[in-house]
Image (cartoon, rainbow, N blue to C red; front, side, top):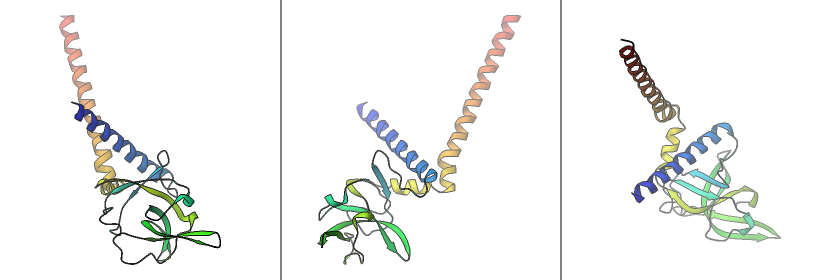
Length: 183
């Protein structure tokens, strides 16, 4: 019984976080969704395998960039193919040149360091060590029109139809009782 309650609580937390992430993604498209300072990211590439797997949802926490040290896993803005993307890689070296700090990063599954050093202003958050397998893939599906329809609209429509059916059955039972009372 305790396990059932714990599983239910975990399910409710995951659904609540998922809905919050999706809502914030649509309501604030230029912002990274944050829930109480925690920023979830869906892992898209295998650059951090075997530590983090594509399709995982990882939880990161906002941090003062100057507190970072070698070995920390960070999420940061990076330029790639003339666009800005978010990467999550490990800090290999902390550089301090003339009082200016920057970070050399590398994915655990990569053989070379990232081409660009990361400035403190480009750091979004640090990985908490929490990863939820497959949840990233599920949330990515929910963000599509098909996923939203299948997982949100269809169940709501089914629930509405079921409740309408129950309401009609109650009305019919009420009319039967009323009809028998009047005879």
